[in-house]
Length: 114
Length: 110
Image (cartoon, rainbow over all chains, first blue to last red):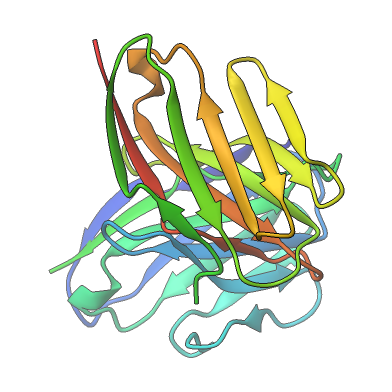
């Protein structure tokens, strides 16, 4: 299965600033997925990132708040913009296993906004 | 919104005992998957069961799927302290979208 390198692993940020999270995959993949996991909660899909087109956002998530880049088939970034304490969460990227037998996740970015 | 409900929300067992957790979902699915998450880190894929399958095994894991009841169960046999983690079910329908359940926190006491 694919190996994903996600960074940073954690960060503490001031409100009003932005943080960009990076995910690098060791193989070419068509779609990359970004999730948010709020404290003590399950995962919620933010958006799906396709190379060469705009990301598709889920209900409740907008591009101005969570801009996504997908410059090539192995890399994507998610930016959390104009952060507030409510953005404190774990953010994870994911790709589908090439055998279509599940998904591989990055190790997550634990974000704390103060 | 979450597709699945999991129960129990938390489970505490002794090492060597079996752990069972359940997942219910609401709409038709292509498959159902189980993941483990240690200490708020990344998720590890455990097992995938397709909608036309009823039972699947992988090592000490046994998964069942009842599409008529829209439910699944995950059984971990002979649990170990290293099994302490949160376990999530996730359903996949058309469009490569995973929808996660609320998770079960499992504590295996040595």
